Amino acid sequence: MYELVGPHDWNVSSVFDLAHWKNGLAFKNIDFSDHGRPVIKIAELKNGVSPQTARTMADYDRSVFVKAGDMLFSWSGNPDTSIDVFRWEGEDGWLNQHIFKVTAGEGLSDPFLFFLLKWLRPRFAEIARNKQTTGLGHVTIQDLKRMRVAVPNEKEQSKIVQIIGPLQEKIDLIRQMNETLEAMARAIFKDWFVDFGPTRAKMAMRGEDPQKHNVARAPYLAPDIWVLFPDRLDDEGKPEGWRLGTLGDVAQQVGESVKPEALDPGTPYIGLEHMPRKSIALSDWDGADKVSSGKLAFRKGDFLFGKLRPYFHKVGIAPVDGICSTDIVVLNSRKREAAAFVLACISQDEFVAFTDRTSDGTKMPRTSWGRMERYSLCIPNQAVLKSFNECIEPMLERIVANIHESRTLAATRDLLLPKLMSGEIRVRDAEKLVGEAT
Image (cartoon, rainbow, N blue to C red; front, side, top):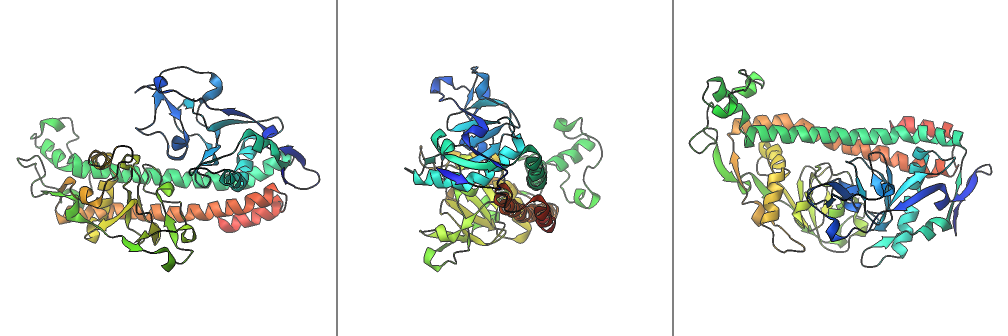
């Protein structure tokens, strides 16, 4: 029995009795197809739906149907990175096994239950770690029944949510802001350097490009940027004056090997498990005190590319100095004005697909810098390269600043949660701490 006590006027209940817990289905291979609804597994909880997500055209009981806003609890996996409670934000789908769909019971608000489970996450991780085999651990129904917590009345629940909720909302808003900034950077890169939009637009204005006959016949970039682009495509289909090259012409591998005994325990450590899919915002890391083997050092502003199973699309910009797994390639631009160009290039779906196609191995495919640097691309003139960097660099700086702000807010949330949930401090005192953090 594990009991977390609170004020004497709070009711004590098992965690299991606070909600309805519905486990997902054990899908069989015959259920899968190329189309239909996604099967939501732990990978989807952490990284969203991807091209690797299994889908099914079949119908199942509505109890395992998942829609946006549903509360999901991952009860099996890596204790430190997988055991957690989530809000589903993706498309409608079907719930896979090893995940509970959680519905708050009578007298318990849904937002309060979410934060209660967030508060209990360290305890869940401890339980899973004690049962860990081959890297995986789990939290069972019996564990939920044995864990007892003190729960306040609905009025107090509402007050606690009013304190923690805005912190969580701001964290979510920052994440959405970073997603928008990244999408803008990728779109500009694709227009300038893949579709050659400005050059084609110039040609269309003169009636020379049949592919752009419906384009607006006016510049769509600022005059000082518009004038930098060539007026036409050459015989190879690229803007005149630009050259065909490879990623290695503008980027280089920069990570240096380090030994764990030479590291300060507080040095940030980023492993593949910390890197989200399809997001350059690396907001999660641990300390080097958990490191027991050789790693690679990186500097703030370097780019990290997950080379193991590259189709997972794990690419990001380092928000701090630190170390990373040797399953990550550390690289940066050869010249400062090409930094944004390099990052945008390696975070494109086309580049990730290239690294996947050219990887070694079947079950555990792995790419390398030697393969990555051979990726073909069209390299613009220096003026356009510099202009792109000046356009994108403030977005990248904002993304990194947002990461640190989000971590500060999360630290405040995680400091307050145990104190509020245990009744150690009441709402009035917590409001002062939130004001200081925001």
